[in-house]
Length: 228
Image (cartoon, rainbow, N blue to C red; front, side, top):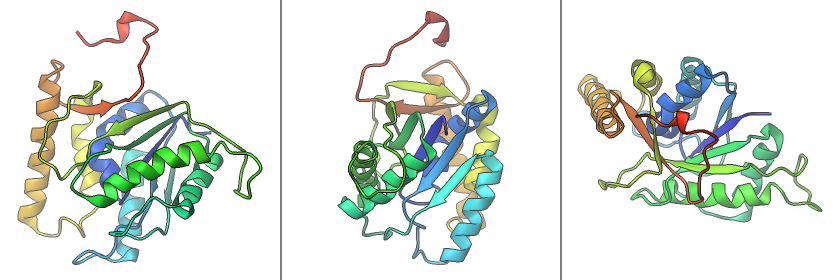
């Protein structure tokens, strides 16, 4: 059983959106996995083999407990029963208590569909009297991370302090060198990750942060968990 499963449309989406939070979770002793709905191909200089190797390297950097890559079509991702079932079967197998999935608005259609698919798969995973593999299971919570093409400000529900993990987060992102194949572009990616992280960190009085949203209310067991 996993504590947390993070779902992305493509390899590198989760690393960009919440790589620091994953490292935070791991430092707290939680078990964490990533589910990539597609292999991310085709891209200009990538290949299926390259992307799988890169995702394995990123798994090592982030110390993930599990990583699964499905075979749904990149660029043409669509909410449909086939995709729901494939994701649901992973949920039934790994039994995560919490799901992190993409924010539901973006310019990239795959990110939008991945969010819809993941929400539907959460519900599908609990169904009985079905031919799906595994036993029924329903993750208790869904949170949304941001890996967006839209240049817009979204007010988060909470921000996680990732200050101790920013360098490792960048190392995980740069495992995907087929996507950042030019030195100049690689440097721009690093700078942008730091700039965005600093922005969210400033809002909570820390050096770096990552934002998250939740559609449901969140309860606290103690006021001590709040950053002051």
